[in-house]
Image (cartoon, rainbow, N blue to C red; front, side, top):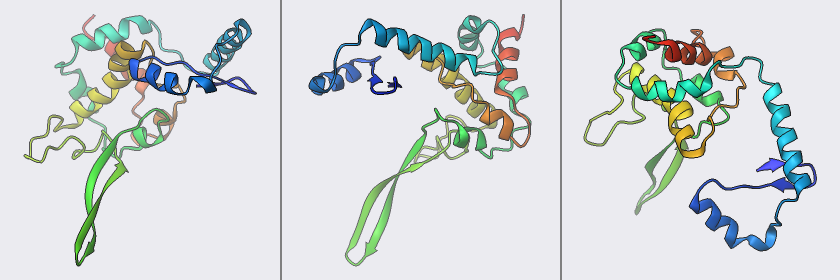
Length: 189
């Protein structure tokens, strides 16, 4: 959804989104040529506000695919203290956990609760069996970067990063996602 002032430009990228829009089609009108032009203008103005640009972005997604098992992630994650501030401040991060909580003891009652969680925390991917597919900082950093700059690009043809820089400016140890991406792009070259 993009705010055009007195209305929203709404587009879907998946079949489920199309189905949802079809359920409420009486609420929507086809966009006019002016609406499309306004959308392009808003997107261009938003992109101008990004202070730092990543060079050669088209190379990054493909390069990340090649680097899944690379020692690069170990090197880049060394300074991470697993505080999770990068993801809590990110406007596009949406990780959550589901927990069953007891609400009364007599009779025993409970409810399933969805809570905000963080993919940078050690227990985030912990299975009930005790297996953790992302047991270390390196695998969690890799997941965060690949989610935003490879997986999301493959699914939606766009990065899952607004360029706001909050993760960079508030990281207590100075991990800079742009520097990590640029190092990844040039890794092994």
